[in-house]
Image (cartoon, rainbow, N blue to C red; front, side):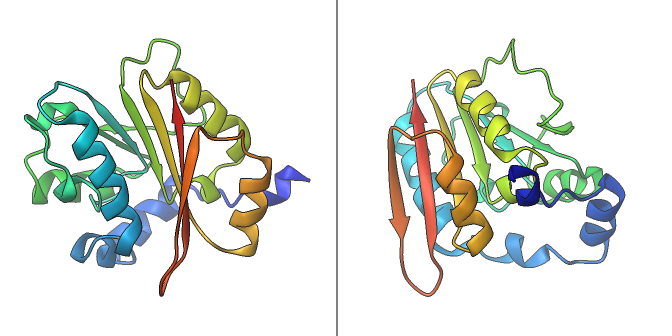
Length: 181
């Protein structure tokens, strides 16, 4: 049944969508309230520290401008689309980035304090296992944000129970889950 929850796209399709501007609106304004909420939490928790943030599915950088890090080297964006990461590097002073698929990435040696899965879980072949792996790999916290839809609500039902969660209600609705160590 959980196989029905995946909505995996090919790397080529992601690159084409970024080239054609499909996701530009994410860079032009924050993802409404959820990215502000995530950034607020991360900014409080990382203030004055060298904590690292691994932004899975970073795309062209919706979260990064909201963060107040001491050094851009604390931010590690990963995405399956090189086109998206190139746009992120072009618009911000990002020196670290990685093209890759979190579902196949080895996280056993992860040194990231915070792993953020902001609006990406729906696109995984195995969202439940991927969230579990990221929650285990994060040194301090894994943050998962999901927009409310019938499919995402079903995924949320099968995810591990978070340490705490927040629901953002307004014009758009999200659930943000925090898996603390």
